[in-house]
Image (cartoon, rainbow, N blue to C red; front, side, top):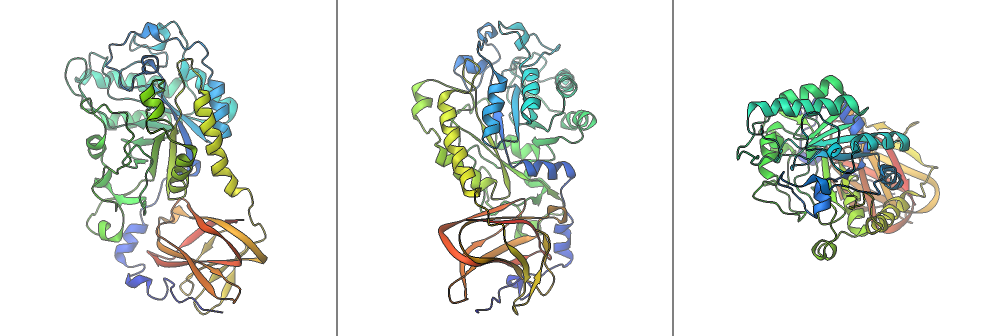
Amino acid sequence: MKKINEGWCINNNGFPIGDAETERYINVTPSERQIDFMKMEYYNFIHFGVNTMNNAEWGNGKENISKFNPKKLDTDQWCRILKSTGSKGIIITAKHHDGFCLFDTKYTEHNVMNTPFGKDIVKMLSESCKKFGLKLGIYLSPWDRHEKTYGTDKYNDFFVGQLTELCLNYGNIFCFWFDGACGEGANGKKQVYDWDRYYSVIRKHHPDAVISICGPDVRWIGNEGGRVRKSEWSVIPSEKDSNEAVAENSQTDKNQTAVMAEKLSDTTEDLGSRAVLKNYRSLVFKPAEADVSINLGWFWHNNLYYLFKKQRTAKDLAKIYFDSVGGNASMLLNVPPDKNGLINKREIKTLKKFTRLITEPFEKEITEVKLSAYSPDGNKRNAEKTEIALGKSESGISLSFPEKAPVSLLSFRENLRFSQRVEEFKIFAKDDKGEYIHIHTGTVVGSRRIVRFRKQLFTDEILIIITQSRAAPILTDIRIYS
């Protein structure tokens, strides 16, 4: 049997292990709310509002809201369909940049209660989410192109008032989602947002909720096409994800485009390697979220441009799923209802194909797996559970099963309560001669790493060798699929 001698306990690619600098990195760990959030992996956006009726992406706050009357609106249908895709929750645009509110608010007449529809849609969705076992999230745009106090100190009072209404009247909220848009209001002024005040309101009423994008808990991937980095770090410099940096890379009133750009807006692909972290003293743990729309726009459209230009296929979305959920990020998939208030047949057809593509690879798990810690001298230490903390003499783990079987996919995680440690790993499969053949090289693991092999293997043992790590790796939830 060919021995493996590329373990982190040998040379760690020449990098130190557990020195003062790497101890600084691994001391940065997630909060419990972040841990709970990372378990969700995949959930949905619902962009819906007066823009839907006007076939628009962004409104200017001057829309005639009497046009808003989605006669067949059914939030149960939204939840039923999205739940069937494996979604864990829904984030709804309670208020977009046009200032039109989908909830009953006393702070503006520009809301759903003053339309022919006349019902609180956030309340309806809250009840449907409870019914179908989904979590509810709130998108509340700080930019408000309708509100006259925008651009003054009074607007922060206005915004906090609406935020408090949403905190108190709609049950448990898992996420408050703030984008970085900051343009001119009705009076031509821009607003200085009182982020700390906003956060304090949320922490008071929903201490377990994550505050995303312009917030301390979850970071934007940097584009609206769902593209993730090869190495998506969760431990990053705080300066790399400030609210100012998010706002700078977000759309503005001078850049109202519906094209979902896939180019990363950051100037670098590397946010958290040792080469980057050594230059910053302030580090944070911030998991990444990849947001993408099922269609070209965020709101539903029914004109030729949106129907036939760059529509996403189920295959496109499945790749984004495996790259994000399987690459230490989460996937936020926008599915906008149509003018009738329903998820349209067009989107349902794509969702069904997407669901099949992301679920079928996990249908045949190899359950009779013997899990062992592996060391370069060939010694193996058996594990009783699905989690292994590697010792100094061990370089990886062995997954062996009683007889040869076809293998197509491997999924595993790090125990992030001990921070993000793995920097590089290699996967080997034992061949008919009893030798280990290298089949894959990867970098970070984090919340989850999914490895899909290019061609199906036929073996009775797979090795995951950690070739570079900041400290002794702790791998968990290791699963292999046929």
